Length: 101
Image (cartoon, rainbow, N blue to C red):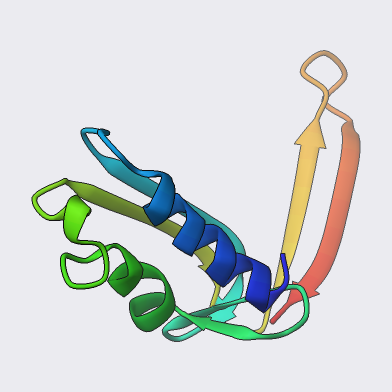
């Protein structure tokens, strides 16, 4: 998602929340210290743009509702290699290497 769409999606999630017992937010993206990135390179602050959207000040109807934030984001330059092995032949069936920022 692009930066603008991420913020709109979070705002809509708060608006749609009426009678739920909990809030779970899952974000998977590239990022850096304190932020995740949209596909357009826009930086979304974890604290200001994600977590605070669901606090009691910005979302009064979520006051007292438990919230869980799961954020998986790369935080620096690192080469990552993923390899899947066949259980029967012990030969790699898929291998992917890339550099992430």
